[in-house]
Image (tube, rainbow, N blue to C red; front, side, top):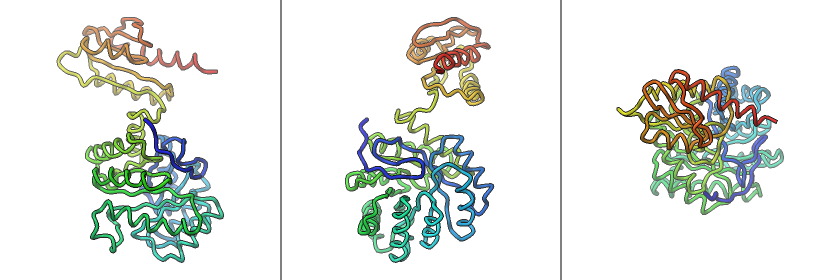
Length: 356
């Protein structure tokens, strides 16, 4: 799919926009004032694939903690500031990679211009992020898509007047259709990179489904330069995993094995569910980084065809045997209890062969 072109914005050790990857962002649950707890959740999210980390900075204690966190993690950090731009100014003075502000909670213009000056001098970034839950009162009689756009456009005029362009935009709704509509509007109006997300998506399946639909459609249109899946969850690990799953499903990013498996039915000749779960766990434990597609299929209907089309595959053939495939070729018939290890070894062998 063709991606919308945008300008490039520096964000710590990476750049956002233009031809750069669509980065995965997550947000901390802990207060930065709890330094060790914050560092632990950042590292857990990073292990899962997080590439940008945002932290709420509501007070001076959080700001003090942020200065220590910055020294001990290597991810680009964004200070999320509401109501108190003085905290954003201090975060920028500390060299935090970006400051996020909201049109509905921004405060006075003098402080904003001071913040912009520091960001400009240090070549840091500004995230302008509007949300339906905090639309400025003067815009609340408009429909929410127009209100998000107009409030963001009004705020954007201030850094542009000060000739500052290291800007990333976002405008999020809790509604799927509104989220799609506002990002379509932003992409047509501005050349800045876009952070894409659906705000306050919810918990568990509901949040995952809503986020996947909204982000999937937006990304499929070529819109978006970094994403966050906003889930009600105790840590940022799950939202990071889902964000990567969305990008991989759309073939926008790839970081490892894509596993397809049948939903199972009465025709299955083996325990596809258990094999798939065990296989995924083994891949994680052995840190297999090979890129490719694996098919795990339960019977003779679609099994051989899907397994043959994948890079590697297993198709249960009888109640005690499974067919092993590699690169479209049938390799051998193996015992079902040995199928998982045989498949893992096949991938590892190829991985070792490709090492320089």
